[in-house]
Image (cartoon, rainbow, N blue to C red; front, side):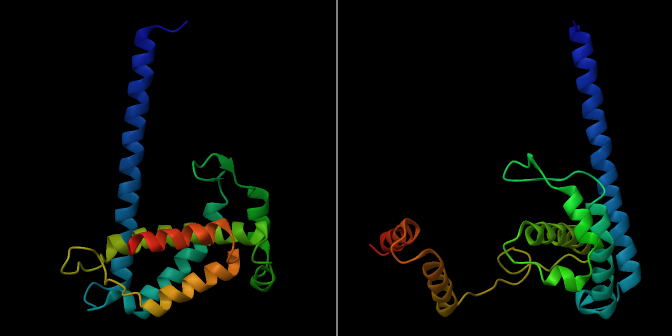
Amino acid sequence: MSSMQSVVATACEYADAQDTADEIVSDGLKTAAASLKAYVGEDAKTPRETEQFKSAGDAVKLALRPVYASKQRYKGRKRTEPVNMAMIKNLLNMADAEREKLDKDSPEKKAWEAVLADCRKVWSRIADEAFPKPKTENGSKGAEKVISADAILANVDAFVAHHGKESALCKNLADQIRARFV
């Protein structure tokens, strides 16, 4: 049986390791951002629109694909369901044309989309660290997108077409919309 001292000591070791890991990740992000700044050049008025920035983004996202496959990943709401890493490695070895032919609802296509999303997320963090998006008047980052009524109705039409007018989801949506206008 373990003593209280053992429990306290291992908890402190864990906390110290976590702090060290967080510091390493933060330093790595800052280093990657500094490298990107040096490559793109800090003088550019709109660095995110330069050819160097775009080519760096493409190269980084491409290089991150095998990194995603280098360790076990998890999916699901609580990130407890293991990703089929053998399938991911097979997808990495496929030609682009073969991946394009995958059915949009297939597990392979969904797995590939997860790989690409992870690569975009990492690139986005580096890009935001190097060249933060300017704040708008209301304090939010980036420009606010204005959604037109036509765009909203097009989405509602697509939702109804997909689920069927008489489905419980559509009836619930209609009830929610009505409740906001009463």
